[in-house]
Image (cartoon, rainbow, N blue to C red):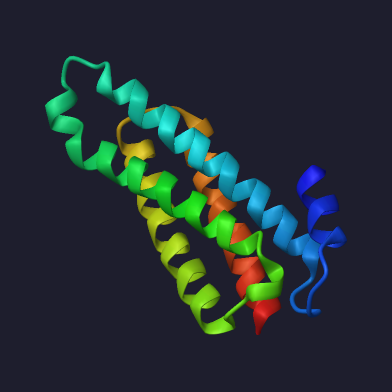
Length: 129
């Protein structure tokens, strides 16, 4: 709720619905946390070397989700083309990360967080037109 309140209190041009932006920011931060935790859990496994690609994908997804959320938290400075490109990249990496998490059997939490990230980014892409 704090993110939504913060975005509504900021001055700036009217652009995409700030409630949609706030939901995307929260979802992307959640996805980043889930991917970080998933990668960390994989690092403690004995077969860690066979999980390198999955770990890197999770960490890359976490980094990109955080960066995207930070960009979205600056509604007065939007470059719509750049935001669209960032959101499309986030969708692609969240899809890959969900697949890797599912493949290595990490449970539904990371997979669901990544899928929610995809949905939020797609919703915002539609909002941006």
